[in-house]
Length: 244
Image (cartoon, rainbow, N blue to C red; front, side):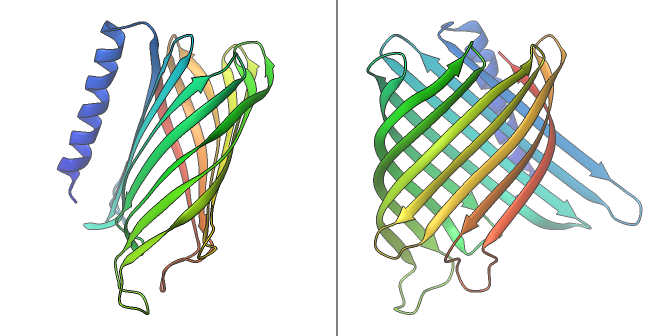
């Protein structure tokens, strides 16, 4: 895919921000953009964008995240990813909820055409201090469907199985202007025993008003990666983040 598709994703992010700002105030979210361009001995372009939206009322909470990554070095594309996840929560009270979640990940330089999953289960805010510090834990189960780029031993390109999901998010407000966040999830295949683990550690600090700087480190591990692919991918990013 080309830069025009990345630009389209970023335009969609900007449009969504404008919509959320002018619409229902039950919506809130954050948009981030990181761009790095180098020239000289190595000409390289790195672009990463993300949009996170949250809609919350008394009984329901809805979450949406869109993410894009593009990297090009010396006229050759070296990384390209488009990912989306959506989750709805039915809240029993201020801490406990049921969740239904769907996720889709299209990463060009991997052994998969795409990876997808649908899960449902129970979540609990086990600790909270103020509005910006909390620990959420959830457990559930569901179904995974992945499409391989190359056929496996039986000639099929499909990977599908029941999964168990464990996830957590820890937010800690270091000060009024800075926030530490740790997200961790693992989806365990119950048939093929393939385990996919995602971790994101980030730190953000306010620059002015709703604008912040964010540094993040992401790790994705696939215990049984397709042949010719590494089990673990890592990504370090520095981006501007706008909260609304």
